[in-house]
Each structure stands twice: as C-alpha cells, then as structure tokens.
Image (cartoon, rainbow, N blue to C red; front, side, top):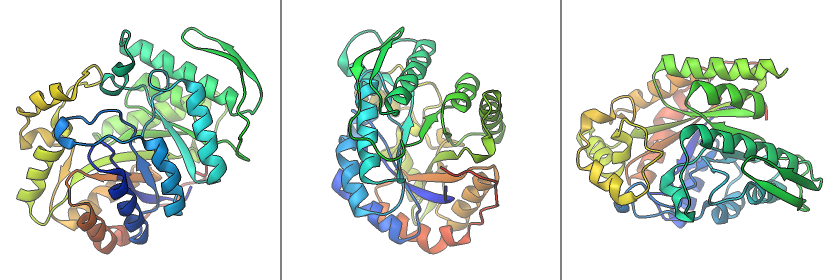
Length: 336
C-alpha cells in the first residue's frame, strides 16, 4: 500500500454527484485514496442525504485513479454476505488493485429497516465473523455451501471474478474484535481515539495476526479521522455542532434506530463534547500536526472527514498547506 492521506466521502451529508466532484478535486490536490461511508439513514434528518454507495463506486472508479474502500459495509441485515461478496468482486474486477472491502458489525440506525430483533454486541460480532468466513469462501470462485449459526448458502458461486480478490479490512474499536481482525482479515480500520486506546487496538491486532502465522508488519492499518476546519475557530466550532452533532455524543450509538432520536439528543450537544472526537481548528498547522501524530502511531492511510459543508475549500487548504508538510516513516511491508 502506498501511504496516503485519504478523503472521507460521507454519504450521510452530501449528494453523490457532489461527492464525486470533491473526490476528483481531492485526487488533484494530493489525496491518495477515498473512503466511502455506507448508510441507509443519515445520523440526523438535517444531514439530509444517504445515497446507495455501491451504485456510486463504479462512477468513482471511472472518475478517479486512486484506491477506495467502503467505510464500512455491515454484512447480514441489509446485505446478505453473498451479495456483498458478489458486489466486491465486481468492483475489483472493473478496477483491479484499487478496491478494498471495509466491513463492520453494523448499527441499528441502518440495519433495523429490514425488521427483526436487533441483537446485542456479542451476537453482532459473531454474525460479522461468520459473514467474513462466507465471503472468503466465495472469493475462491468455487461453488459454496454453508450452514452456519446465522446464515446459509446453497450452491452459491461468483462467476465474475477479479484476478485477485479484494482485501478485507474490518472496523474495530475494542480488544476482542481487534484480536479477531488480525486473525481473519487483511488489515485494520479504526477511528481516532486516545493514544493508549489506539496502541491497545494495534497490539491486539498484531497478536491476532501472529497467532495464525501472519506477519502483521505487512498488514495495513487505516484510520478515519473527523475534523472541523474553517477560516475561523468560531465557524469551525459552529460547523461541528450544526453539521455533525453525532460526533459530540460520547456514548455507544449502535442501538439507536431513528435519525429523529439522534436529532433530539443533538440539542444537548455542546462544543466541549467534541474534545478528542472531532478535532476543531482553523489553523492548517494544527491539522498537519494532528495527522503527523497519527502517522507516527503507525497508520498507513488516514481518511479525513471535514464535518462542515465547506468541502471544496477544505480540500484546497489540505492540498496547499497540510499534505505537503507530512512525513511518512518507513514501515516494513504494509502492502495490499
């Protein structure tokens, strides 16, 4: 993997046509990849969008030349794992070496729409791990049958296969899933957090990889980071509170079903609630130092989401003042 700063295309906030335009701009200004969110609902109704990312990925592949990753797709509710495997193989077949499949355990906000009981976290993790097993089997190109605890495959085969299946990355923020991610996946996705927590996640990820004979030094680590930049600190703070109040909610959100509930909670969010969660500053040097810090922690790609509506201006600032200032230390391997 070529180390890079990536652009986070957030489908909860923006029309897919606008996101495509900004991704092209981002590539031109030095961003090296795209992470595209996969939602059915926005976090709050005011965010206003939530297009189907898999329709958009083909357009992205044609409009840009950088690698891209879903950030993240949850198997098992909206999507059967077989459909995710088929979709991923199609995108990778069209754009060889450029697509990475990012998976996660899901949130009720998006997955409750198909009805049924929304399980507790332990079951969600079990379902994710079984889904990864099924996707791996289908990536072989062979006819697959599967009878698992949660899912079934009956004589399933993917006919449109890429030369090489896309790598699988899993979003994780806890010790157990970090360990499992190292065992069953090709790389790690996590979000910005305190250094101690991130070091713990990476340590468990490496332990899991080593336990099954993998070399963790060649397994990429991806980070998603939320920031708010504007010409003034006041405007940057207002953007965070108005446009991304969910970023100031310091509690587990995976069980909340409705955007309207998030909107009600958002009325209680204050600027101080974003500390350590959305990094707010008008100073480009602040953003350069922030990214350099996470680079130095060992991440190979950092996908930055500016929470405001000022996407074009943010991309220009990053390309002119931040990305050129960053230094990537050598780390053995980390090749997809």
